[in-house]
Length: 210
Image 1 (cartoon, rainbow, N blue to C red):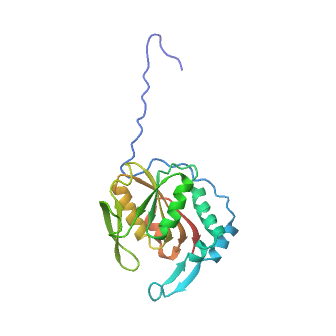
Image 2 (image 1 turned 30 degrees about the vertical axis):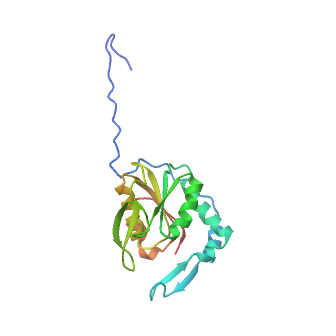
Image 3 (image 1 turned 90 degrees about the horizontal axis):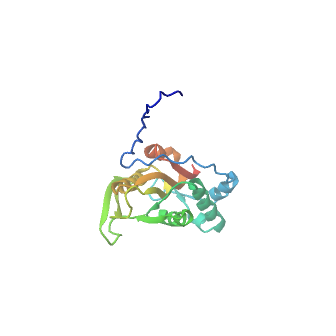
């Protein structure tokens, strides 16, 4: 480009838009997961269906046989962890109670901190609290105040995604401390209950979808 002698030209630079509170910065492209489908079929074969639990008409997906099988447990944990490789994850928030099992192990795999979200009265120090409706009743969750530094990038983990009410409540606690929810991870997703739609547009990862 020709320029007149002795004249400087200023080029305006575009200012980067700052993300609004609780909106995470642009995520890395989701890595492709090469884990064979057959390995998850093996895990699916270990999930036990229990009719009329915890109430009549409900078919409960029992993960205890899967937890008892070391191979299946490794497949599930690695299958979730692989989906967040390359992501900047500061903390895993696990939801009581089975979210602790998978969340703690996932935090170790991703070199992230683990933060428990518990039912009322279970945490000893000052807490933040949120009430919500589940598919069965009205409930509440609590998290210790100051658990997450502001702008931390968080993945919320639980065993089952049903209506999404519990995960959404956990997200409210995370965002209440100024952190970002960059994803949700579940072992089982009950697609007929449309929980995924409730959590979108945030990323949702599940190993076994029913």
